[in-house]
Length: 364
Ligand code: PEP
Ligand code: MN
Image 1 (cartoon, rainbow, N blue to C red):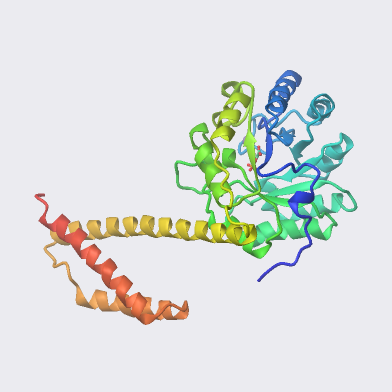
Image 2 (cartoon, rainbow, N blue to C red; image 1 turned 120 degrees about the vertical axis):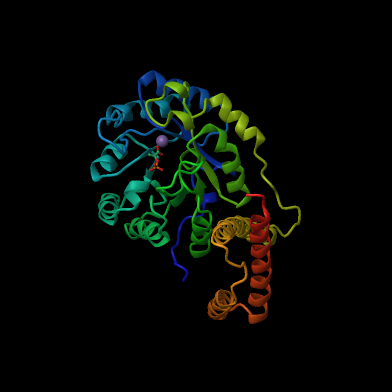
């Protein structure tokens, strides 16, 4: 299903100077000096399009730093006056919206905990009726594309046409290298559902650590995202929130310098754009297939060990027939030919057997 929204193409937004649109600044506004100095250094890079700083911080546990509140809006106003940079902050309630607008904030974004809550989204949308402001919606913390789209639709219904999405990854209980799981297929699906919707990537909140920022940013550029939100702080190690993922303006410059923005070489750029995006999807699925196979073989090895310990043969015909029956029914329902399913699972089965044999024949 394609959602028909008449969203302003990002090329027409006043803040857009070219790809990637870059929103940068500290996770949180902490002090006037920290905000002003970070903004001066970022403005000097001549690469940043919007200066960000969190004023109200949604924290997981109470007693953590919850933001400086409205006082920080004065500093953002000063940033704009002194550096000329448009400013942006996160809003989660009607009060935040009114306060931010009062201080002339150019870009609002809805955080991941808020976009997951339709009541909060509706309240914010109501506060934005008739207002001309640019709004980005971060993906909800849970991997639910419809919830993300629903948040966007609520703003659209309130008359906001300068709407974009920010992909910041999804929470999981399991500990993974990244702070939040990217689940790239979700923003890709969002693109297919609302092709004109500007899409930014937030490598800071996906990665959660400096070491991952570049690879995530590069991947998003290779998937044709329109821009990036990257947290930057003059002294990241002393930041009051999200210290391990923030970089100095200098380090940000180095990261941007390494980014490869692949350009289509053909004159038919639209065709190449779409082709590149689709190939990016293919590569991603192939990657996932291999990861899945690795996991499957790992389980097969565990089974091999278990059978060995219990003196049971590797090949269990009944079990194999059951697998083939199940996958061919499912394959058919998904439009995959019987021949393909048959060949693929025979190959997978053979590989499983090889892994089990290796375990069985091992010395212990
Ligand atoms: C932030 O941008 O600092 C923030 C709190 O983001 P998120 O809503 O993605 O956690
Ligand atoms: Mn942050």
